[in-house]
Length: 495
Image (cartoon, rainbow, N blue to C red; front, side):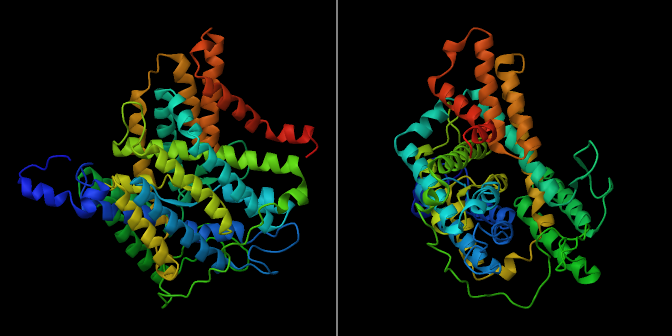
């Protein structure tokens, strides 16, 4: 246990008992208060998934023309309740079993692929069955030690690059979620500042206020800087909405309000509690897809899910560990096997609950930035997700624009690790560079990791050092080549 200055032996013994002893709070240089704040911040930065996942999964019909949950009309409340429930249970499991400040919820990108790439070819139950199969495969890979072995095989410089790339990625997520950066929609330039090249609207102003406040509080070393900023910015947002009546970005008549709030409108509707409906749980068919689309198509779909899920978590847990100072000399976080085990169970559980694969969230870095170092923070986040199943109106008050500054600040903190890469060694510098830039540029952690692995192997071959490449990296690089070429391969196989 880490020695506490000025504490008597009796005091130290007391501090190492109970929650402190189980979660090793003092041993990791944290406090109960930091863990609580970190759990709160992580929840606020990723609570958007309760709103966003239903919008992605719930508005798409399957091959039979039915919406998720059955019927000919969307049922977003059904999906929101199951999304929050599974996220809560799995995040608590991560905290208790793995003692790691990592939260889990439905994976963005994965859910879109399930909705538009899988459910369009079969029923929703069949699609969720494939997610369960993918999760079970990952679970087997974890239990056989393969997933951990791959992590060991990754060169240290690439592990650092993964953390830095994710830092840029989540900073971009924050800027986009707040409307500070937007797509142009036309011309050769893909993104721009605000709407039409200028910052417009109250939501962006609220985000800017929150970002400045958070940076100033952090620079002045104020405890709970991130949490204080989120709360105060939310209060400002509620006041602005009450006075100006900004409204959401996407209006009920399907028109777009470009200067509106993104997803959550910060207003009080007079209702704090709602009874959740969990009837979506168990709505999956494990083998139905084989009869519907055939074995070859099923294999390609599961492979695509598998590779994205497999490496997203590897990058996320590394980045969180690096930011928290929890990595060992080999760049491994504590309880790696347990982290991977819970994450693999989450993938299958998400499919079984009908809300798509659950995975580790890089937004957990916001909680780490607030001081979280143990699984107690995950338990706090998980409990809040469970409460969100009935307190959804309260969760909806916090807008993206109030939580997004935390992602930008944490992106900066993770970016500082870039100095650990040897930029004079092209064999690692170029793969590291590709890893870092392609994560935000492609909006995908897996793509950045894949490009880094493949280019690393290619450069080793080009310089006559093929023998220095770990055997597992050959396998992984080959799998990523297949992953990048999945579309032409599917066309060649007639899928």
